[in-house]
Image (cartoon, rainbow, N blue to C red; front, side):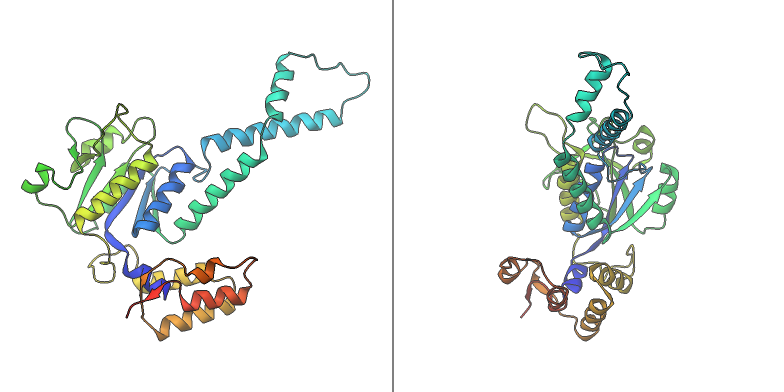
Length: 306
C-alpha cells in the first residue's frame, strides 16, 4: 500500500517551524517540501488570516473588487451624468482594474490548492507566539531549537563543517525559518540553541525562504539520519494508526472507496521500493472514473518490495 510506504519513510526527528511568514506562496511551497521529504511535523507561529494567499493574489483580489465596483457604477450611470475625463485619477484606476488577468488569479488558486493538498497529510500546529511554541517544544525529548540566520555567529550547514566534528548532534531538531524580509525574530534568536546558515557562492547573500527551507531541511534531515524512523521512534507528532486512518479518509472520494482502502490496509503491510506512478497511470487520455481511482488507490502506486 502506498499509505504504508509513505508512513515508513516519515520522520519525527525534524520539526519545521515557520515564524510569521507573510506570503502564502512560501507557506504552500514549504508544506509541499515537508510532505515530499517525509517531514511530518510543521509548527506555525502567528499564521496570517490568508495562509494560502500570496501578497500578489491579495492585491489582485482588491483590484478585481474595484473593477466590479466600477462595473456597477457604469450600470447605474444616467445619460445626464458627467462623463469620465481621460487621464483623470478615476480613469487611471479604471484602466489598472481592467488589466487584471483572470489567468493569474487561476494560477494563484492552483498554487494554493497544492499547498492545502500537502498540508492535509502533515501534522500542523499553530501557535500565537514564541513562548507558546517553546513550551510545546519542552515535551519533545532530545530536541534542540535551531534558527536559520545569516549572522556571523551562525554555523554552516555542510557535511564536513568543523563544528559537526567537535559537537554532539541532537536526536531531534526544530528548525526555524523567519519572515521573507527580516528573517527570524530577535526573540527567537535569543532563545535558540544554535544558529545555522546555508553556504552562499554568489553575490546574493540570501535565498527565497521557500527555497532556503527546502535546502536546509534536506541537509538537517540527512545530518540527523532522519527518515524511515517514524514507526520505530519514541516520539512522533501523531500515532501511526491515526495517520493511516486520516490519510485514508483524505485519499477517498466516497465511502465505498474508503472501505476498499481500509480493507486493503488491514490485509497487508506491504511497502514499495518506488513511489512513482506506473506508466499505465499516465497513459489515460480522459478523466478517471471513481472505480478506476479506487482500484489504483487499493493496489497502490509503485513497485512492491521483493
